Length: 242
Image 1 (cartoon, rainbow, N blue to C red):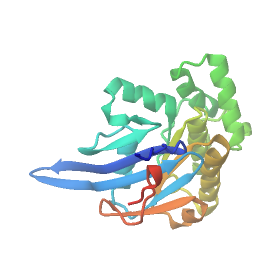
Image 2: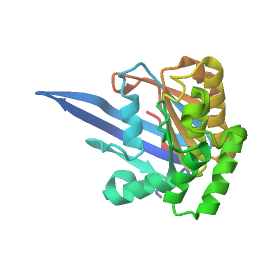
Image 3: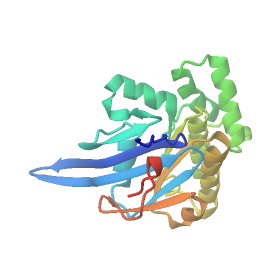
Image 4: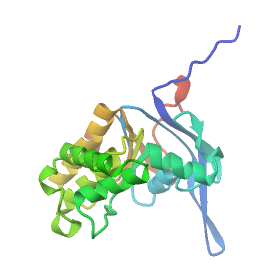
C-alpha cells in the first residue's frame, strides 16, 4: 500500500531549484544556483549573507517580482510562476507585504495616507482603509505621528510606517529586504520586534534577508546564503530536508 503524504498546511512557501541568470554584455552571471527554500506561517525566517550573495534576487523570485530561469515556487499552495502576469500582480496585492531599506514613501502623503493608499488599491472603501491604517499605525507606535509627512519623521519612524503599510494588508507572506540597514541599533531592534509580532500575532510567514548579524537572535530559523547558494540545511514540505 502506498503511504499517503499529507501536505504540511503550516508551510506558507516552498521553492525548489531556483536558478536566475543575468546578462552583462557578453557575459552571463548566475545569481541563484539551484536554491531550495521554505517558510512557515507564524515564523520569522532569516536569510543571512554578505552583499552580492543573491539574497535580494531570492526575495524577488519568491514574491513574484522576478521570474526565475529554472525552478518552482509554491506560494500558499499554488505554483506562483505558472500564473499569468496579471494573476501574479493580484496575488502580490492581496497576499504579500513588502518592507525595503529605502522606505518607499510618498513625500506628499502623511503617515495615515501612506498606509491607506495600498488598502484602497485592494478595494477597501476610503473609510475602512483609513480605519485600518490607523489601527496599523497604532500597532507600530505611531498614533501621534499619523498626520506627519516623511520629511517630518526620523528614519526609524519612516520604517515603522513602511511596516504599518505592510501589516495593514494582513498579508500571509511578509517580505523584508535589509529592513534595518539604514537604522541605528535601537531602531533596528524595534523593527525586528515588529516583524516578530507580525509572525506571532498575525500568523504571517515573515521572510527577512539581511547581512545584519544583530537580527539573528530574533529569528525562528536562520539560513545562510553565499555566492547564490544556501549553505545551511533548509526544511522543506512533507518532512524533507536539503
